[in-house]
Length: 75
Image 1 (cartoon, rainbow, N blue to C red):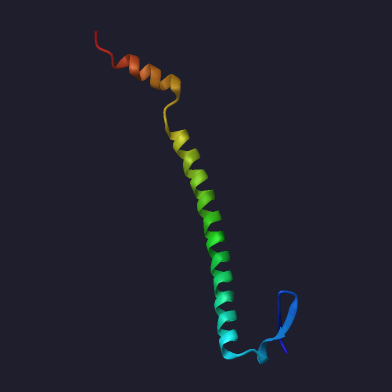
Image 2 (spheres, helix red, strand yellow; image 1 turned 180 degrees about the vertical axis):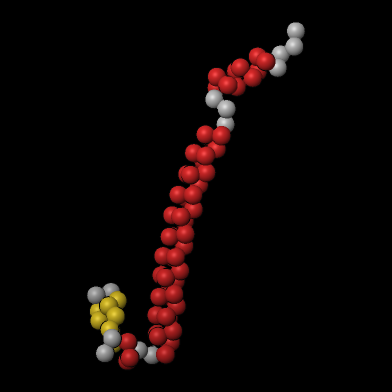
C-alpha cells in the first residue's frame, strides 16, 4: 500500500477519496512543473551570463573607443 505523509500524518493513497486523489495528482503535477521551470531558469541564467561575457568581449575597449573618437574628429 503506497502512503503519503501530509502534516506528519501517513495516509494510504488507495483509501483516499477520488477528490483527494485528484488534488494530490494536481499537487504532484505542480511540484514537477515547478522543478522543470527552475531547471529551465538555471539554464537560461547560465546562457545569459555567457552572452553577457561574449558581448563584453565583442565591444571595443575604452582605449579603442577613445582612439576611434579621435580619428573621427575633423578640424
